[in-house]
Image (cartoon, rainbow, N blue to C red):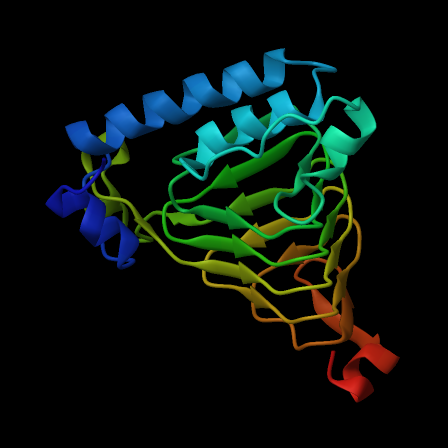
Length: 215
C-alpha cells in the first residue's frame, strides 16, 4: 500500500504532489478507519485496539479472547497504547505509538513523514502534531496547485504533553520531558526538561532518578 514515487518523496521530507492517487487512496482509507474508531464510543478495549490497529495498519494477530473481561482488557497493557477518541490521523501508516502511552481526545496528527511516540507518554486533550509543511515562497506554493512537504516528529519515552500543545514538523522531544499546556514546539526539546510558551522555551531542568539510574 502507498509505494508510489510521490509517497517515497513525501517520506523523505522532499516536496511532493499531495494529489497523487496512491496518497489520496490511503488518506481515504485512514479517514474511514478513524471514523469507525470514533464511532465506537465505549466499546470494549479489545474492539478499540482492533480499530486502532486498522488506523495504523498494524497487522499483528490479536491474542485469544479471555473469558474474564478485565483479564481480557489487561492483555493489551503491554502491547498497545490507550487512545481516547475522537482522533484524526492523515495517513496512519507513518504513525507509531508505544505501549503504555495515553493519547487524550481530539488528537490531530498530520503524519506526512514518520511520527513516533514512545512508551509511557501522556497527552492532554486537543494536541496537534503538524508533520506537514508548505513552501514559504507563494510562487512555489501556488495554493492547491503546488507541492507540499513535511518533516519527522519524534517524541521519546516518558514524556508529558500538556493540553492544546502544537508540535511542528522536524521536532524531537527528548525522554522524560514535559511540554506545558498551550505551548507551540518549534525546535527540539532536550531530555528531562520542562518547556512552555509560544514558541516553547526551556523553563528548567527536570531532576529525576530515572535519568540518574539510566532507566
